[in-house]
Amino acid sequence: MEETGWKLVHGDVFRPPKNKQLLSALLGAGVQIFFMSMITVVTAMFGMLSPSSRGALISASLFLFVFMGVFGGYFAARVYKTMKGIQWKRSAFITATMYPGIMFGTTFLLNFFILGKHSSGTVPFSTMVALLCMWFGISLPLIYLGYYFGFRKQPYEHPVRTNQIPRQVPEQVWYMNPFLSTLMAGILPFGAVFIELFFILTAIWENQFYYLFGFLFLVFIILVVSCAQISIVMVYFQLCGEDYHWWWRSFIVSGGSAFYVFLYSIFYFVTKLEISQFVPALLYFGYTFMMVLTFWILTGTIGFYAAYWFISKIYAAVKID
Image (cartoon, rainbow, N blue to C red; front, side, top):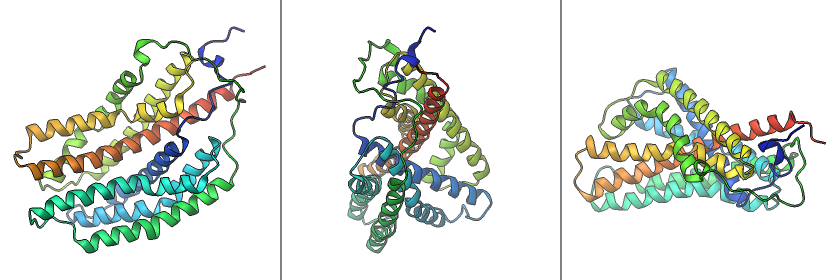
């Protein structure tokens, strides 16, 4: 039987990637964000969270995020062990501090600028301390707990063995360039969320209330499905080109829609908002950066797990001599 593209790389497809601690940290954060968004949207959809009190929505999201640390740690540990990682404590620490650290640092920095303006929109010092306590008192121990249990379990089973010597990756066609494929792949998931994004931005920046949580739930499901599909398609093309470095690529490619979300936020800033001063503009882009980063990690995680599931399935169906 003639072997084609993806079958030729069966001995390398599960070769562990570079920077595995960073990848498992991103996946752990992604799992946390996924469960947090899912539960928040569902509870808001059933009317348990009132859209008119934004504080309740944000507090619920934050509490959910820190308590989902158990799942984040568990899934990150399973993937880390599968990628033949050994320093689980260090990896757990990176998982627990990287994403929350970036978010907290950005908020803290922006807060200084608002403080300089003597605005009423500053986050009080006591709230900052409470956030730190939630991060190091709840989230960090829970991630370590999840990591401990995840790392004690067996790594994920792979249907094919990995060869000792890595294959040469042949020259790739131009459209499989990582940057180009990320741009192409980002269009579909962004198209799914783009109208909803307009309403969300309006709710955040123009003081309007957001009531369409049922619709948002639907859009969230469509986003998950489109990220999964686009990631599977791109990874399949990549394997057909005998390029087996799919671990990072699946994450980055399906996170491509975050780039379009960022472009759209710039467009929204220019066309809809009349902001001329430096500090408000800095605030807008600071919070946009946090939103885009969160979106990137979420979509990337969905894409990674979809591609991983797909690859395990297709290689399980192949009979290798």
